[in-house]
Length: 128
Image (cartoon, rainbow, N blue to C red; front, side, top):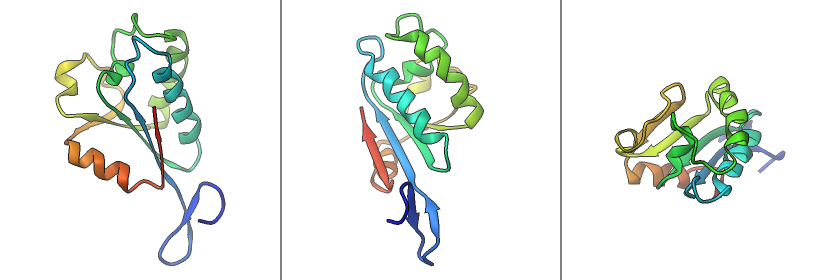
């Protein structure tokens, strides 16, 4: 590992690090989910390749109805920046059918094995 946030390619060049933030907290019960999203935004606003994985009830963070979310005022302040920066969200299969999600976000559903591979191949992983 070279400079902070950079990794070496096979040719020795410095490349941006890939960072995965996994959020599994229920945003209706804990402010940790919104705080994790805020942290992801800070890490993803530079050159790092950022993916946010939303598990269990965490896709509610991207829901069209956010009234029951703890710290919704903080969430609403930061969500437009995720759209602007095109930060990728990875969701469990069937999340779109389970939740009414805002389709303006860059998101895709993936099998559990694909999510595991994304996490395993990242340079840095944060789990909330």
